[in-house]
Amino acid sequence: MCEVEDGDYVDLGKKEKRERLGRTCMKCKEGAAVLIIRVGDAFCKSCFKDYFVHKFRAMLGKNRVVYPGEKVLLAYSGGPSSSAMIQQVQEGLGRDTPKKLRFVPGILFIDEGAACGQSWEQREQNVSEMQQVLRKTNFPFHIVPLEQVFSLPRSVLQSALPVNPKRAENYKQAVDRFLGQQRAHREDELSGTADGLAQLRVTGYEGGNVSGYSRPPTQLTSALTDMLRSARTLTAKLELLQSLRSHLILHVARTCGYSKVMSGESCTRLAVRLLANISLGRGAFLPLDTGFSDDRYGDVVIVRPMREYSLKEISFYNRLFNVQTVFIPTMETKAPENSSIQHLSESFITKLQADFPSTVSTVYRTSEKLNISRTEFAEENVHQERCLLCMCNLDTGVGEAASAFCATQVSQHLSQKSLRNNAVATSDPDQQCCNRGECYERSPSCSSSVPRTQDFMPLLCYSCRVTVKDVTSLSALPPYVMQEAEHRSRRVEMRREIQEFLLDEGC
Ligand SMILES: *[C@@H]1O[C@H](CO)[C@@H](O)[C@H](O)[C@H]1NC(C)=O
Ligand SMILES: *[C@@H]1O[C@H](CO)[C@@H](O)[C@H](O)[C@H]1NC(C)=O
Ligand SMILES: *[C@@H]1O[C@H](CO)[C@@H](O)[C@H](O)[C@H]1NC(C)=O
Ligand SMILES: *[C@@H]1O[C@H](CO)[C@@H](O)[C@H](O)[C@H]1NC(C)=O
Ligand SMILES: [Zn+2]
Ligand SMILES: [Zn+2]
Image (cartoon, rainbow, N blue to C red; front, side, top):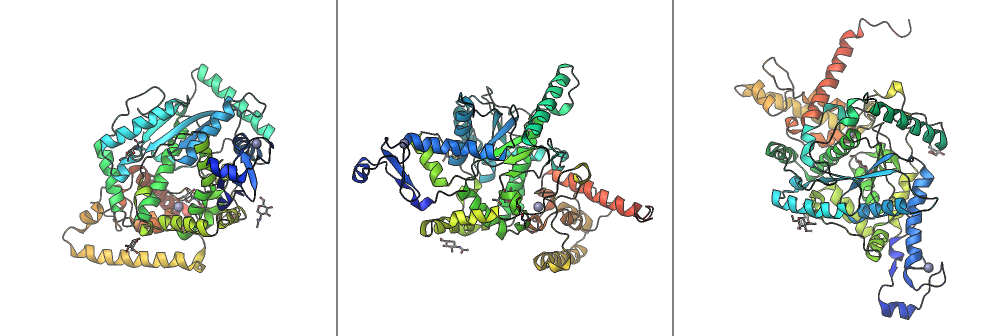
């Protein structure tokens, strides 16, 4: 439970320090200690490695969600934590022990260069650096530009039935069923009846031996920068990016047949995100957002196997065992600390850690104590209303009592009113409001498929509404979001229309 408290880590890397302390490893009683964790537990290099590797294996073992032979996508950023994660998977698959990991990994790196204003030359250079590192893993890899969110299909935003719908079955039954499904699927493929999904490819950027990373179409790059420009605050930009990035990961996982995604957040990172997410109004989703496994998409499950390592512990491991990391700038790394809620949370946690080392794990452990009544996935509630952006169950059906929620709605209402008044004053109001993506009053001349703000907002959870409120133009959002919004609001409208023809349940 992230019990390694950062402040208690002592590096005995310097020779004179080691001699001064004269410690031997408390585990094997032989090796010279290279570091001390917790109060006085001195570890030698090899025992530290055992401890680190064991923790990873134990995390997967305890939770029992990954099946033998299952395709698992490792989300990689180049940073210390996801680099250590890949290293652990390599260790685990390579070992010839009964505890050998048995899943089939692939790696995904998303090139977000366009979001932080890198030139194509810089991105190309970063990507080729990345390719060199990834090639050494011998795992298949995918490098996908973030721009690709502007060509995603609407279906990304639909939850699907889980591969493993029955929570009640035990691990062995689940594995047996998984293997049965795999076999059936392979037979389908052999007889040529496999459906389209398995054969879909992520266009052009499939890794492995492809050395040319082709430049995404410039109109997609400018669509991305326009979207970010239309977000008024850095907080909103980062939230938007977070949502779109997860949709892209989900899309790659689905089209390439991965049913699990491993995400490498350390407990330090999770504590930061936890605090940020609470501040952003995502309290209702904390268990899903920070837990070991996250099944909000249904068919693809996100797992976080690094959540019990602190960043310090990971840096130690990487340094001692020469794990290569790749520094790629992102929007998060560039801004000053007081520029967004996310950055503020980060600097708060960092300072807290320096002065009160054990608080970080306390923050993090608090999240473990939270439960929501998770909706069990079943045929009948797959179509339950989910937030269009973060895909969590809508938390907005709370009535008048939730004051923050009401306040947003009221101010939303007022700003729409003033927009309407302004629009009336212009010469061609319909045209203008459509171009700005604020067609609150659809008229026949509005041919654009941008939904009205008042139709769009109800499709979002509280937190995403707050984010979208800071986006000046809905039409800047990627087309698949708009199309799915259109689709959902049309469905709501249709349901309302046929309501009067339906018989009451009670009759
Ligand atoms: C990526 O590009 C940035 C400049 O935009 C540079 O600072 C960084 O070192 C590069 N990283 C790699 C691994 O090439
Ligand atoms: C914060 O919220 C985002 C969704 O916007 C989610 O993807 C992320 O996992 C959350 N992180 C934590 C630590 O709560
Ligand atoms: C952000 O911090 C910098 C220095 O740390 C300071 O100069 C600046 O005024 C701060 N901005 C705001 C909006 O507080
Ligand atoms: C939370 O979940 C744990 C285990 O899943 C359970 O024992 C506990 O009763 C739950 N707490 C609440 C308040 O539902
Ligand atoms: Zn030892
Ligand atoms: Zn949401």
